[in-house]
Length: 250
Image (cartoon, rainbow, N blue to C red; front, side, top):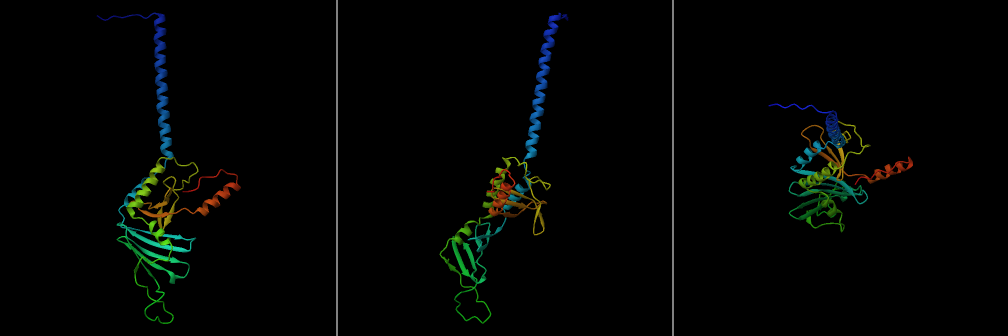
């Protein structure tokens, strides 16, 4: 048998009060959820789109070889070294403007072979006006410095460089995009550049400025070292304008 109870005025007041508390709680929870969602969206928007760079680094790990070009010894010595997937290295090193002092280098099987590009003491006479042929390959030939060892140490195999870049990108994912970072391309934080005519978005990482192909399949095109001279020039300009100094690139 159904039973109907008529509430007194006091009971109605208590019930309305309870309903009011429930409604307030629901509204507060809704605001909290909306705020969390909004904050999450803002945080997501503040982060860089690293997917193209991730894909390019993944492909880099399987590359057959890499070519490194750099300078050392106060820009006097120029190195052009290629390293294969297995870690073998070959290339040239030139000191000064005199190309007669250039050397070829080959490191394979744990041994380093070198030869002069122009033999300083050729076994046969060289006709006037012509350069001597390269010298014979020799093991352990050097000029008493560690420049060549340092240059070869900087050239690592594709898989090892990919691991370094993967760590650098992971570090970027953990930090939001700076408010003053350029947003001049379709992917935030990247400056639209090109490498030999190929559109190449770039991003600054702890390992250097990474440039990849804009279109799929994404490939690594270049990794540029930071120029400390530009950092010093920028710092001087910021000081002159009374601005807060930004952290230099690593």
